[in-house]
Length: 251
Image (tube, rainbow, N blue to C red; front, side, top):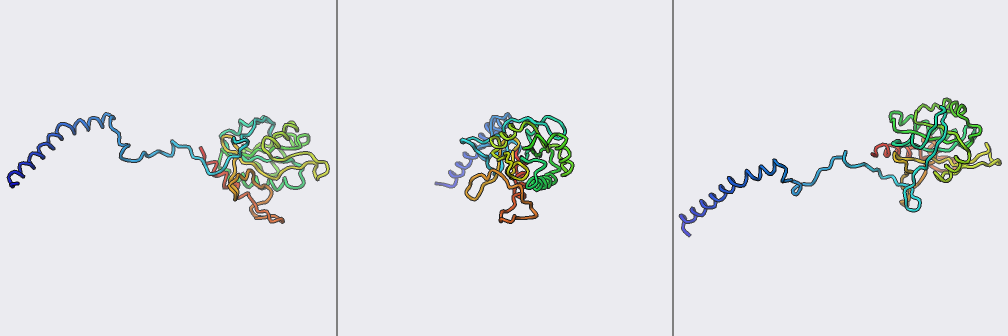
């Protein structure tokens, strides 16, 4: 092929490119400005964290394959106000069953809860639900005095009293936390020293054990300072604090 012919070919190709640019590029620009052309094909879509709900790695307690939700309840708190499960909506909270004249585990449980209260004092959406299992003695006035003695200041910490049978049903069936009367034990009542952790949507949550199953509850008797009890059981208050913080970040 001659040099002259080759130059003609290059001129022809250049002319075609020029014509294409004059005719089609303005049209493409108009389509982009008009919103007809998107760029999602050539780059990944960046989804803002605000548009996607954050869920922590904590597990749900499941009953018959369904996450267990806190049942409805209605009791009177230490200030004489009616408190229901609705008052805890959009809040992360810890549940305990106790009684004010308990001579054994309750004082230790509530000192631990006060420490947790103080850790999350700046969070308006953190609370505690304390249900007395001796409502005949633990009136609103008794609960108020108890709250003052222990330094309970969180406005979302409700110490509640009501019908004994309803409270026992709430403990044993609603939260799967054992509570009952026993005249043969010191104090006349026996109950679990565990805490339940509830998320903002009212579901019982916990972390996994070594086998991948939910731990369900947190030991409430042993303090962080103690590390472990005389039987070698380790404390879980630090674990509970970590998991409260996780749930507070959930949407």
